[in-house]
Amino acid sequence: MDRREFVSSVMANVMAEDDSKEGRAAQEDSPAVNSPEITAIREKVAKSSGLSLGLAGRLSGTTEAEIKADADRLMEAIRSMPANMHTHPKPLVPTGGAVDRASSHLDIDPIKLAANIMARRLGS
Image (cartoon, rainbow, N blue to C red; front, side, top):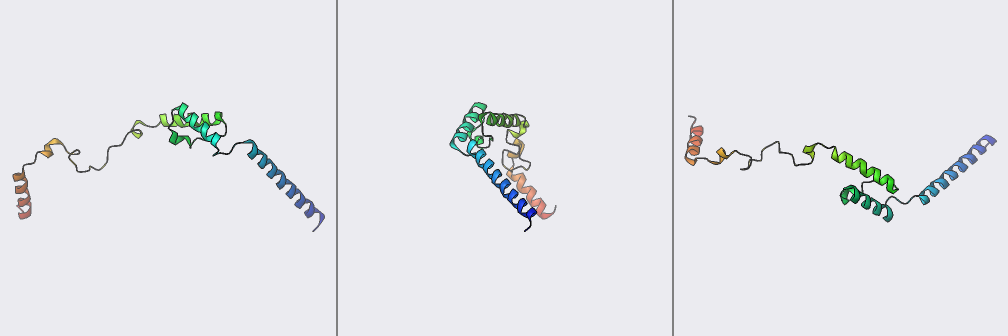
């Protein structure tokens, strides 16, 4: 191993160690994403923003200001949804029940129905 390779390997080790120290310091300074403190802040912000508690877990951020900004963006997205997304859509295919039919279909004469069936079967 020549001198250049030795110096570059030492520099790489020093840089890796320095990066790991910075990463550990950042982790110690910021609370964990799923810590009880962050969860409590998310629930508080969700409640104050009008979001359901089920959506509180979707909020991101590590400070109350970041979580509040994310909640505001989410509420804006929900408000801008088309009106038909808030309700149940009408089925494209009728279910065949009495609700899908007009009232004229409910008044069926059984004698005429039997005559039509017989006529179709006999080919007249």
